[in-house]
Image 1 (cartoon, rainbow, N blue to C red):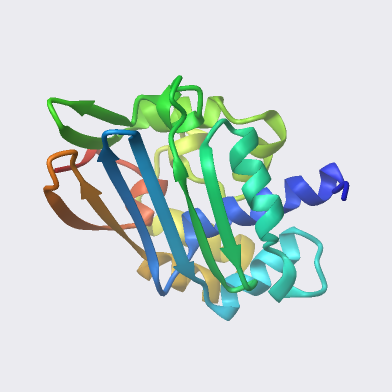
Image 2: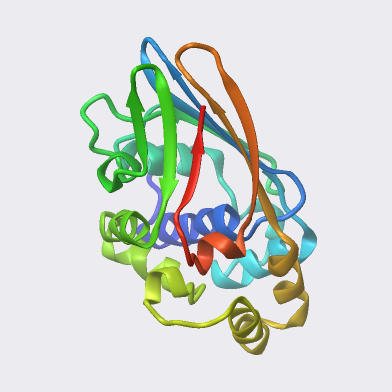
Amino acid sequence: MRVSTKKIVSTFASVLAILLFASCENEVKICANDSGISFNYKINSSETFLNFFSAISNSDEPNTILDAEIISNLFTQANFEDINAESDGKNLFVGGKLSQNAQDPFSKSGMISLAQKRLSISLNKTNLLEFYNNLPEDLQTSLDLFMSPTFTGEEMTNEEYIELVSEVYGQELADELSAATLKIIVESQSGTKKNYSVKIIDILNIKSELIFSA
């Protein structure tokens, strides 16, 4: 079955939105083992976010905007490996591995490093911009919808950014973004596991380097 480029781009825009804005359950696990580095991402988004995603993807059915097959294909096209995606339109799970030849956007950005069985994820303005620059132009345009100072290069406080989101997308979405957090689980090759929690806004408007390691 052929899927239109427009639907693929709008679906990826929704995925990017979920990865950046999703509230409720919002968890990513990065694990190093003998076969490489794997990841699992799961979320349970709210009705506010679903309505927003529906609007940006021009869908009349919010519960169908996330197509697991399209999501799986998108991650595969971005050079991630062994992708498994499941979605009921509200809950999303994506699992897979970073590419063996380091050609996926995360590997190219230098965010993730593995040395002496120690796994480390670092987020800063430089590598987040490198991640952005390794996305196709259409997907960069989708990401631009969210006006993240991290990617636009604008200097503003978190309060100013939330106010901007409120002016463009409404106060309800801005309030959820302000409260949204991401749980990060890092598991090293030696089996050491550490849990972290970071506010989404501290990534979208990054001020200093964030490091998560085990």
